[in-house]
Length: 180
Image 1: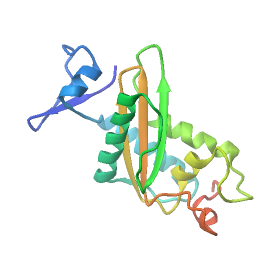
Image 2: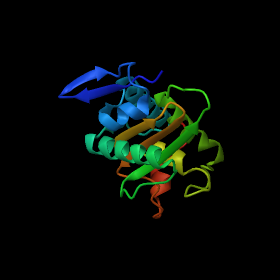
Image 3: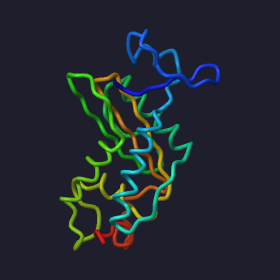
């Protein structure tokens, strides 16, 4: 079961079972992203970044709010796509016929798995590696996360400041480092 909470009149309360589901509760309350999910998401980023000599990320409340807004939009529209943010952004989608509880590391692990397609001997933009390179982009310092789910469909948004994947000469060499 998804660990969700509602914010109502300034109080943060567990989502009560008398609601018929997350989607119903979501329309009437502001859902507060589970702190366990957020910690797992940040920890997964920082563990991978450490392997590549990149500094730890910290959460930015503005990025969190924008990422959550976009995740909510994607769940409502059931369409996958990027927002119009000027920051970096990774988008994750999954669907399961059975109810699932999203884990904070799941999206990050999927993005990082693109390392298998990245050729460190030819640094630069490469097919099927943009999520990975954004996760480990050395000059990125701030992170935002959004999660939206109805229990079956899951959207996770990671937003990054400053954004990575800059194709100017030398940027990939200086920001996407091999494992140390």
